[in-house]
Amino acid sequence: MCRNIRTLHNFAPAATDDEVRAAALQYVRKVSGSTAPSQANRAAFDHAVEEVTRITTELLDALVTTAPPRDREAEAAKARARNAKRFGTPTPVG
Image 1: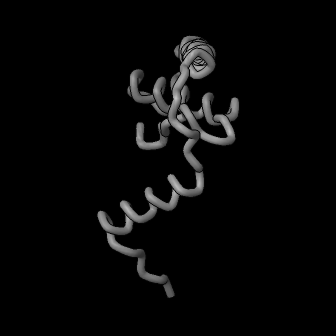
Image 2: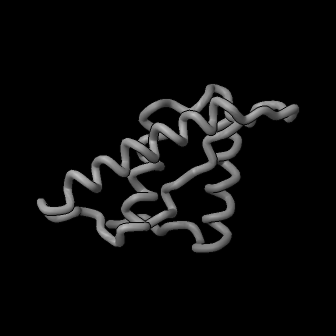
């Protein structure tokens, strides 16, 4: 469930609001143990997502580094290579 949470700091271009919210949603899903909360828990779940999004944005805005920004495409290519090594290359269907 948490595999979709990605490092958001020190990328060029910077993380978008949607990326921060997606990470917050995955975190709240993991912590709550629920991907789709009941109606009784919907308000608490949504509030938690908004608060985690807000504090994550504050954190990212406050972090400083002297390292050069990482390239999203290069990082994605590395991840694809790791996955291919770990799981093998997919076979074509049909």
